[in-house]
Image (cartoon, rainbow, N blue to C red; front, side, top):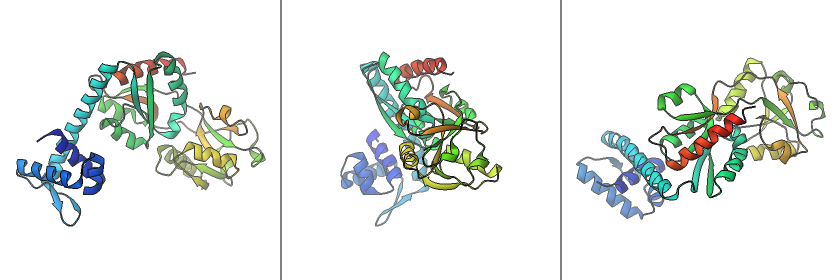
Length: 301
């Protein structure tokens, strides 16, 4: 048994297809199939239900797969740790972000660039629940999202809270002159307004939908997207108004748009920057986290 066989097994679980699993593993399909059959022979267990196509894992295969996930996760974490030790505070930091929680991320990266100019960033977008999975699997080094504090404590993750932000309605004054003003709006004021909102599966959208229901309002959703930029372009063109947390660079980037506060209770989940527990986090991620923790505290106001 070797680590590549376990990686192939995990890729097969993700792709649910031999050909795609081979592509994800950077090997040919015959090679992947042969290595997995060798693993079955070595373990003297049938792991995979085979027909003309992949038909899932056997009960024994599911048990072995659970161990394989853990071993591959540790192996990938070890590779990242060794690379971090060689490079110091340089290289590529993989950041997973929930779009609506990531409004503060560009400012944080700009501040980090002043201290660590050799550090580069790869930012991927996730739902709040997917982000925890990515952190556990070492698919990202750092996560910025909405989290249940009890879950973070249970997993022993290190977390730096992001200041709770007020929620604003974003609109184009030429398209929605009735929205012009500075006094906070209630959700009932949006009953007849077309809205550009995050997808229903996203935590921020579920948070909004819950309060719409409590207010007895059925939102008129014109555009749904996981992309904040897509939503802002829709607002700019007058398709509707968006609802976003404050604290972003959007007012400076799109001066034609206006922002008006909404009266909403705080979210139950906490926006936070999260890394793996001490002892499991890479040196690169730990150094960035320590800097970010100080920066977030200094900019809490």
